[in-house]
Structures are given as C-alpha cells and as structure tokens.
Image (cartoon, rainbow, N blue to C red; front, side, top):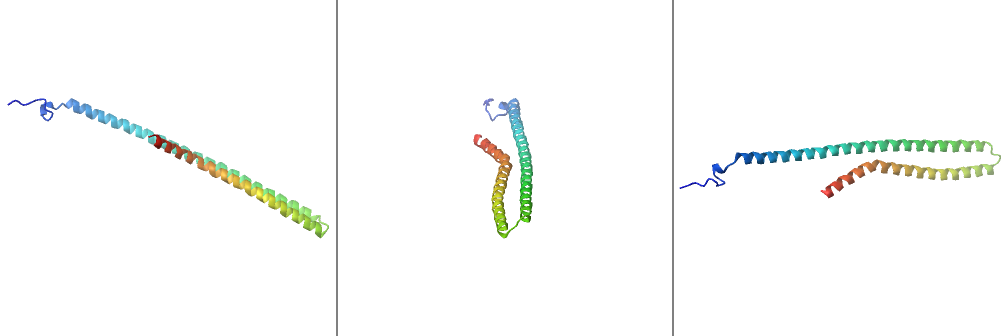
Length: 148
C-alpha cells in the first residue's frame, strides 16, 4: 500500500516556508494597521489640543472684550450722572427740576437699552466664538465617520 505524499494532512505535504511566509504577511499587516491606528490617534490628539487652545484663546479674547464693554457702560453711566448733577445745581424753578429729571430718566432708559443690546450681542458672539472650534472639530469627526 502506497501512501500519497501530496495529501494535505500528511507530514510530507507540510511546507514550513509557506507557514513562515504566511506568518510574516500576518505580522506585517498587523504592524501596518498598528502604525495607521497610531497615526490617526496622534492626529486626533493634535487636533483636540488645537481645538482646546483655540477655544481658550477665543474665551480669553471675548472675556476681555466683555470687560471693556462693561467698563464703558460704567463710565457712560457715571458721566451721565455727573452731568445731571451739574445741571441740577443750576435749576431755578421746580418746573425746570421736573423737566431735567424727566429728560434724564428718559435718556438713561434709552442708554440702558442700548447698553443691554450691546452686551447681549457681545455675549452671543463670545458664546459662538468659544463654541466654534469644538463644533468644527465635531463636524470633522462626523464627516470622517460618514466617509468610512
């Protein structure tokens, strides 16, 4: 009885070179995938760092702008109050006092509405500027997932 030597289960059909080559291909593919995964993680970490830095810069710049606006509001209100006090010192009649006081209150109300709008706009802009880097980064990540 003759044994078939090309039977895949027989020891003589076993080729160590093919096994080594298959293992090498598997290892190279794993190493390539690891390098690609590392590169993606490194890029994501760098982008996240840039996003945080941009967000902090926007927040700082916006906070300074809001602070300057608040100082301007206080300065305007103080100037108006001082001017009103000076005008009151020159009053010669009760009717003139009432007229000055009414005009001051009306003007103060108008200025307060304008100041509130200005501060609200600055606050909205600050919120948008602070949120923009994170929003852009999230959109980029979502686009990456959609493309994959």
